[in-house]
Image (cartoon, rainbow, N blue to C red; front, side, top):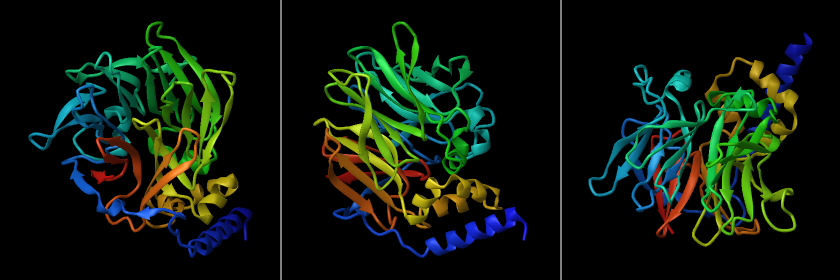
Length: 364
């Protein structure tokens, strides 16, 4: 047998063997997310990020066809609020990954509370902004160090200093290639800072394995960044004796997406999926991931292998010190699946998902 075939055969054998190990609940978790109210996003898919404007209206969310939608709680319907490109002639299907670079794919959303502007991390079109009235967003940052941003993902805004911290998940892979980024062991992700006044961009961290969610601490002394492939959150100190130093804020039992701070200064982390034995082995052995990519497997099959073959949802609340305070799950994926963000507001958790055609509302 040829070496490549042997390698592939061995990989398949390991995959099949490890899939026998089921993903059980996280110790101490509460299997309650299936009780969430489901709010359909009619005619759309993938409400990745959620944001409420300074008046408390919304949420606003970006979906897979490139639009940013606003929820009208009085009329109970979604309305078009903004887009990140005017080139939308072909953007007529709810889900068309091959057109994301044309239609845009808005991911992280944050309102600047003082101005009312909505900042948008568009995976393909960079960091953008749109005014309180919505419409066509304008470009803020589209390239860094002479190269176009390839996978803009999430952000948080320091309104005291008027700067934005945002992530570029990869300098090699686009968003629609995120499985390739993980399986190749790509470590080109970055955390960046944009100064709104000077319009200058600074690279704060490099070499991140799929840089993802971003959140500032309540006192603005540090900023967190999710490193999805490594299933952990890093902390970059901005103030105090440790300013400029980076450490591990917490290790997680799965792949983190967005991070959102609540009014108490605690952090909600959405896990795209828990990390099973196979996924743990896979991301630790890049040769195996690269071998999988050579097999005749489509995105759904590769994704299924990574997430343990079963849809589920996990939300974790962390203290300001990185301690686990609460774990909520939908272990069977009965209602919530592959969640991307958890936003706490007025005693409710608003839950986004990058793959589902709905969002969830869980009463705390």
